[in-house]
Length: 182
Image 1 (cartoon, helix red, strand yellow):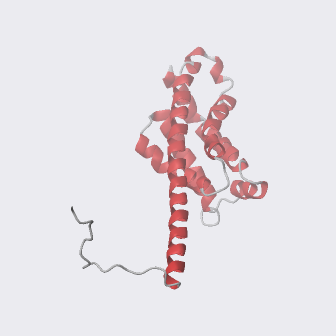
Image 2 (image 1 turned 90 degrees about the vertical axis):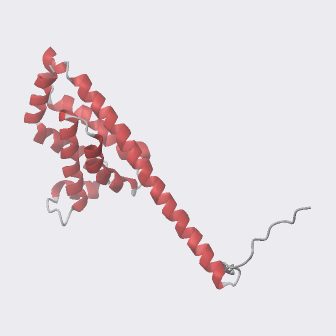
Image 3 (image 1 turned 180 degrees about the horizontal axis):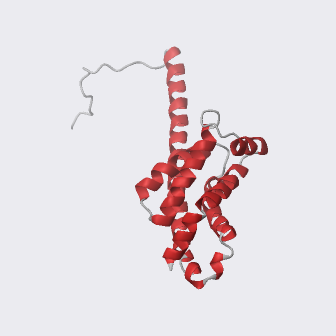
């Protein structure tokens, strides 16, 4: 049952991943999307290449087994790129759920067979799990970004107060000043 679907997905992997990548690229502004899709040089287009390679590896995990650490290692760079851009959380990871549409589009004829269709629920479940992993990665990235902003602002304020002479260092050998006991 699922084996039939897996073998079909393996045969159509290139077409599915290509279409999936096109949908991811289309989520960017038109000029960026065009560049991501057309530029094949990994040095001229590291975002496009990182995204394509990540999608390819994640697709393999969805089809053959969901090893969380492997998924994270390939999905993290894709999500990390999207987390520093002006995407809402839902928009940043919605590309993962687009894979369901791509699979249905590319396997339209094959899914009419009950043997093939029966394996689709497990693939859908894996994609749903992948979206949750993606959301965890996105939140972690955004938390790191906000922590960097907080640290930068704190350091600016500290530096300004220090330059103004409003901060003095407390020597380490000062005795512990506690309230006297009555």
